Image (cartoon, rainbow over the protein chains, first blue to last red):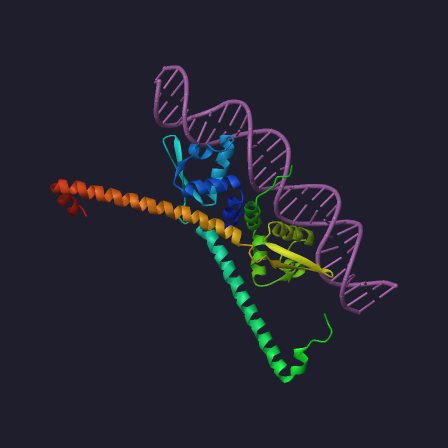
Length: 129
Length: 129
DNA sequence: TAATTGGTTAGCCATGAAGATAACTATAAA
DNA sequence: TTTATAGTTATCTTCATGGCTAACCAATTA
């Protein structure tokens, strides 16, 4: 019955929030407790914890509690999933550009060939502007 | 008064939706009309148009209308912003790993120096493999 | 043992996002 | 000139999100 979000959905929507991006950025520099993480933000703890939870269910962040303090760290291969997606898109995109370039080249060659056969036409386009 | 979302917010939340990601993927392969784009989706047109709008205000997609058909294309440097963000995070992350490795190396050296002063201990350590 | 600290649970509210339908506009085709 | 196509606008419903407070553990510290 649950909505079964895909991993990418969760990662991207986790990163869509500036607070959560800031947390990720902070955690890139090393692990930290919830309290430390929450400190810079003018936000009630329970609200803040929701962000942590969102990051955790997206798989970007892991945490573990020892005593009464919960320590958070970035999941090692966390950002890879999203980064891969970009690279795949870029691959398709660049393949298309290559094909487009090839196409343009072909057009150009055809034009040149045509020009060789009808030099008068190519040298001067009639009064069109 | 408006909420003034950052560009990254918009890009990531645009990409957080599977429909919109599919649109982006499709557009990587070349431009298309709204109708063509909407075709594969079982969704009313007005709903679909909202997705196009979201992609457009995020800057990922551009479109222009000629006659009665609106043609959409991926903005050339669209995905770059987001990709950059990942790369910056990775840079910080990797710097930290380097520092961590340096730290481990330092510990190791200190241990070795200590071992040199108390050789009896080191020999034992060897056997402990 | 009492007080503090660090998080957690539960529940409330306002806003926004994702979908739908219905009715409309403007261009193209018959 | 009618009809069909391709979007657009307006409005409604539902559900998710992001924030809050209040009350509640469970470890530390005094």
